[in-house]
Image 1 (tube, rainbow, N blue to C red):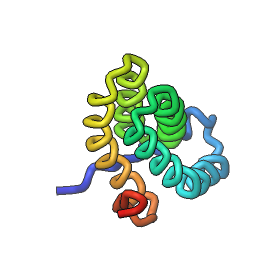
Image 2: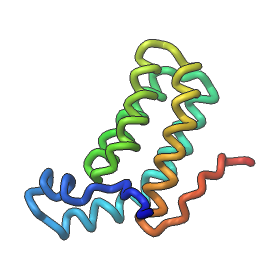
Image 3: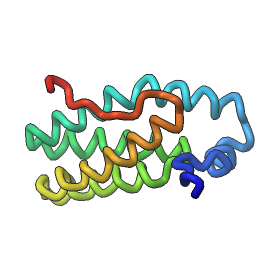
Image 4: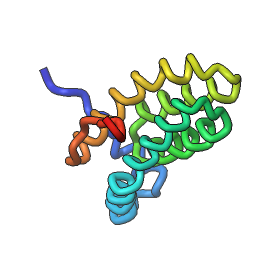
Length: 120
């Protein structure tokens, strides 16, 4: 059975009007920036910081959507919506599903996918 791809390159290229160089650049930037953003998201969730959680989840949602990683984008949106509603327990629960998607996307991008919470 073939593994389902996490990144829909055709969707991303449609957004980018077929610009493959830009898509390659987005992948590079994503691999460089998103791991730190995921660490920030975890920290904001741990601290119960609704507004910062909402902001970073929205940022990650947009980045993953541009990449064509709709599963990851959808999970980030769930976190964002929970934070907007002030339901940090739901946001924290959604983080588990988000991390699963994140790890799959990073593995597909050829970067170590296993998420390690900073500090242990």
